[in-house]
Length: 161
Image (cartoon, rainbow, N blue to C red; front, side, top):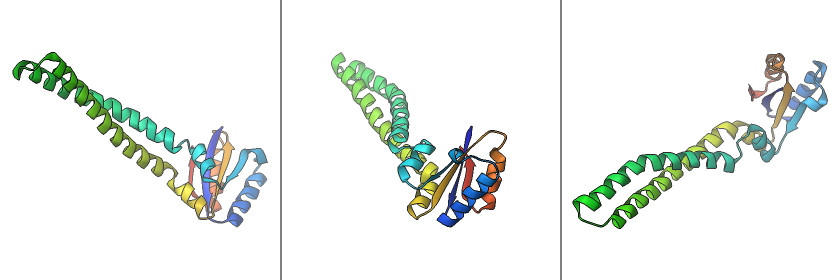
């Protein structure tokens, strides 16, 4: 089953669309009308903490990898060229890795928030303004048919998830 989603600006349009889908042979259990932000975000799989933390983890990983090279070079320079002990070199490597993790994590958070907003903005904002999000569980073969029905009923942002 593939969920098909569409946004209706008014309750009347969504009710007509639900009736049309029922006439087309879809059971009431296959049709959901969502109005709450949390339900919409959960359906889209873009809850803020999950999305942002995933990108932050990627950012931390890339930051550590990129900054590890600088940390090793700085540690080597401190130990060999400047005559400091190995402890200073180790602290330099660890400090630069920590800086990479912080910078990468912050950039990852920024990217994660942007990605989260991009995926959910239309539907969440529509629900905030009184719209209704309709989700139809359709088989692979019926997905295009459901999309056509929702588009004919003036739904915005019709797509398969």
